[in-house]
Image (cartoon, rainbow, N blue to C red; front, side):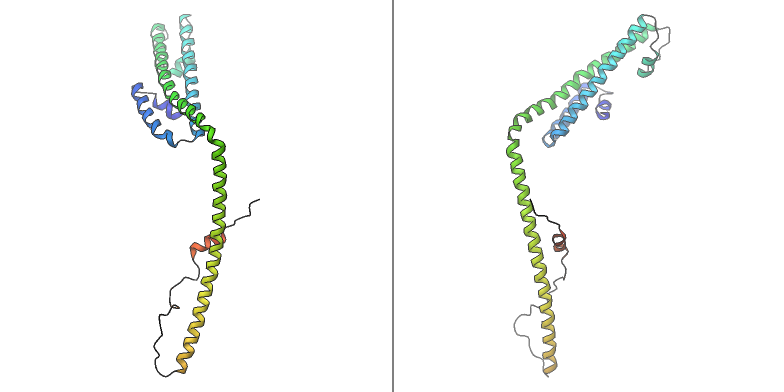
Length: 216
């Protein structure tokens, strides 16, 4: 609530509201429902605080009119008029009340933006059962694809290991041939055993280490 209280603390209240309204409308499309409710609760709490402060100021005015000294209210609202000048103190408390009543007007308008958005979302909430069903289906599909990727990664790792084993055997046979021949023999066709294939692919390790539990 610090943000909204500080925003309306100083300056032209209409300008403050219009600036905040623009920002709110930019954020609303991406705001979750619980965030929306949090904003409403925050503004409602701020409005309640303002009403309580108005009541305190009104109580202080009644005390002054009875020639009593509202010391706690003076300290809270920083009204340090001379003790004997109750007329000035009453005027200052009335100004504090007027300021808060004006803030309440604009904060209610701000809260109304959220109320309207919440009402629209409540209407759209009839789709929730279908959306939850779709979410479950997508999660199951993601699980299936993960299992498939893990299986492919394990199979590819086996193929890579077999490739390196084949390359090793090829090099041994090639070396043996070179020992038994006394002239350089041209290599027939393209040699596929000299490709720099890593023995362990880091990307595959992620899938191989992935713990995928069977769904119930």
